[in-house]
Structures are given as structure tokens and as C-alpha cells.
Image 1 (cartoon, rainbow, N blue to C red):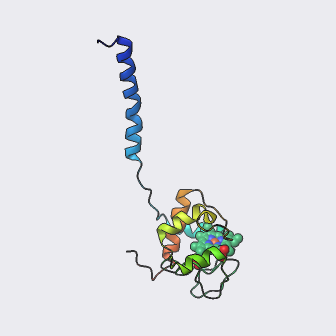
Image 2: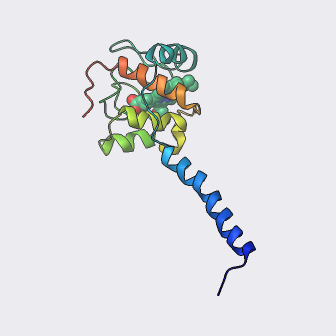
Image 3: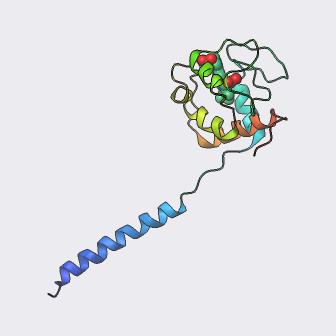
Length: 144
Ligand code: HEC
């Protein structure tokens, strides 16, 4: 059976529609999670420093001190009273890494349901900058 001209056109245009979507998917790559540490520091001062100190062995405010946070077991800063989801992660031996933190900052309560850290950083660039800054205050951390 011969295809009518209209049917052939339909098949062609359906194919043409698929091509741009296929190439879009191929171009979508994992975004870098380490951004600009200096910008991250600025963001930290604005968004995080009211609750978190970063000096070695520093005191905790509403949130735990974050010096050396990468490589540290979740929920383990000496003397800070963590909520139950963080303590459960601590028992499971979960460790803060740049990858985990980048994901965490998008929605901390999604990772730790019922946790008291609720600030969400939706902007990917700002999250990457903050992650780079946290790496800069984690001198002991060696990524595998
Ligand atoms: C209003 C206070 C507050 C602000 C602002 C805040 N946090 Fe927190 N953060 C907390 C609290 C409270 C916890 C502990 C949560 C719990 O125990 O339920 C926490 C926990 C954390 C932890 C886990 C630490 C550990 O030892 O397991 C990280 C990492 C963290 N915050 C990063 C940040 C960053 C980065 C920012 C800024 C973008 C920020 N926080 C802003 C209150 C805050």
C-alpha cells in the first residue's frame, strides 16, 4: 500500500519534532557542585552565620559549628543538641560530603524529615558557591 502524501508529511514532521528533544536531553549534564568560594562566603555571612559559627572548635548558636564539616559524621558536633533525624543519621555513620551538602541545601527537611534546619537554597549557583565555601573551611577533608 502506498502512503498518501499527507501521511508521509505527518511521519516526517513527527520525526522532526523528536530531534530537538533528543539533542536537548543529550546536552543536559550534571552541573558542577563546587562554585566560587568567595561568593559562597558572602552568601554564608548573609544566610547562615546567624545560626552557624565556622571558627575551629567554635561555639554553636541555633545550629552547630561548621568548621571541618566535610568528612564529619552527620549530627556529631560535640555539645550540640541535634534533633532525632540527625541523630539517626549519626548512628548510621553518614558523613557530610560536598555532594550530600549540595543536595541537602536544596531542601534540608526533605533529607532530614522533622529537622530544625529549614532554610532552602533553590538557586543552584548559590548552592555550589556555598558548597565551595564549606570545602574551604574543611581543611582535613580529602575527597575520594
Ligand atoms: C535559623 C537557623 C539556621 C540557619 C539560618 C541555617 N541553619 Fe544550618 N542548621 C540549623 C540547625 C538548628 C541545625 C541542626 C538541625 C537539627 O538538629 O534538627 C542545622 C544543621 C546544619 C548542618 C548539619 C550539621 C551537622 O553537624 O550535621 C549543615 C551542614 C548546615 N546546617 C548548613 C547550613 C548552611 C550552609 C546554612 C546557610 C545556607 C544554614 N545551615 C543556615 C540552623 C540553621
